[in-house]
Image 1 (spheres, helix red, strand yellow):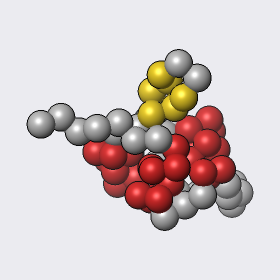
Image 2 (cartoon, helix red, strand yellow; image 1 turned 90 degrees about the horizontal axis):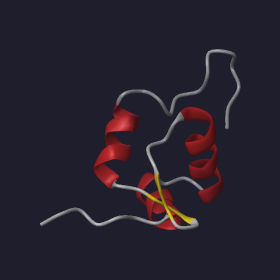
Image 3 (cartoon, helix red, strand yellow; image 1 turned 90 degrees about the vertical axis):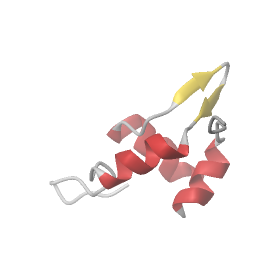
Length: 65
């Protein structure tokens, strides 16, 4: 069975962050997302791999999202 696509709200809940953080990570840090019409959709396994690779950590300049 294939993994279903998750909405911004669902992936935010999965990660324990706000929807604003999801949008910021997608725009500024390359959070893996796929545009479907006017909506952003996510695969939990892609996002989990992205988190594990350290891409969600704070930038080296000390700034945060």
